[in-house]
Image (cartoon, rainbow, N blue to C red; front, side):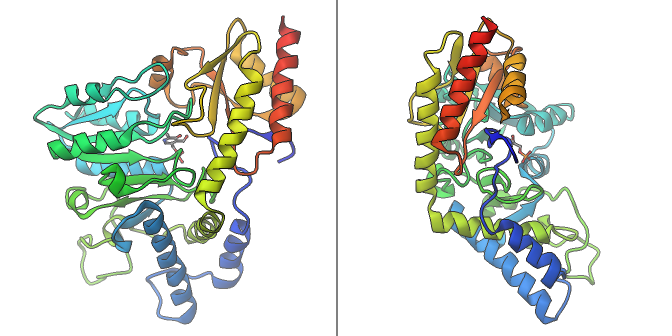
Length: 385
Ligand SMILES: Cc1ncc(COP(=O)(O)O)c(C=O)c1O
């Protein structure tokens, strides 16, 4: 990466130190499958896979190591849970800020008789808990919600949702794409039955690696949507019911698991809180420098509370795509322009259909980069006057 990378909301760069080496080590020195061989290298790979589950259990405060399931990304995790759980006649509640990873599978399920409703969010992206309550019906089976917005960074009040879900005996599934690795994501504190995660964003691991943690109550209700060989109970042609084999058919992305293992160890050593502090410091510096510029409309929250390091700007009176293009072309600053796979969030924030230019910071973002980006925005706006 030669330029200034400010698209960590899409995927983190750089990845954690040690990720590339761990993946290369698997390819060069280990190389075998897990659960399918009784020889030393296979056991070594198995130990790394188990250790990765343990690290994730610790991160999400999940009780059982076998209830950590690997998938290729959070989109697959959310599909696996929603499509394995929701049947014709069921109702689900989401927020109006959701990513297409939630809304598209639900739209497809709605053609098969599953209903869903969107709880209102305020103009800063925060959830209206009263709206969640008002949408609960007799047949409401699940609430599926993001922990933080990938458009404006607002952290949703999910503890409140967890309490409501518990009171009504509804399953609660959390999309932690933008928070895992930068914010505490505690299954118990959130009152969540499942937390879905992706490895390549703030978990600082490789792309193609994600998963979910799930409790026994929800696990028992979710049918696997991929079935096949697991290396276990080979005498049976039925999918095993035990975890994690129930949801992990076919050869897993072991090289990805090695990478995620290294990034989780880095996060543990560095401490999520210190990464969060740094990212928020960069975010606040950026906001301070750009918020008074003419034509800049900050979308979401201006303050540091209840947010992650994702900032969206609607350049009023300009074409957001043109600004994004100029930043890339003239200053080599990578941002993400448009609707960020979340049209409903943009409708909530009042930025549909024009979208925004999104700047998202990471653990390696420096103050110099923030100053450089703020100056580049200033000069670009001056040129456009
Ligand atoms: C909130 C949210 N959910 C889901 C996703 C999908 O992530 P992935 O592409 O890793 O499946 C993203 C990625 O942009 C996201 O920000």
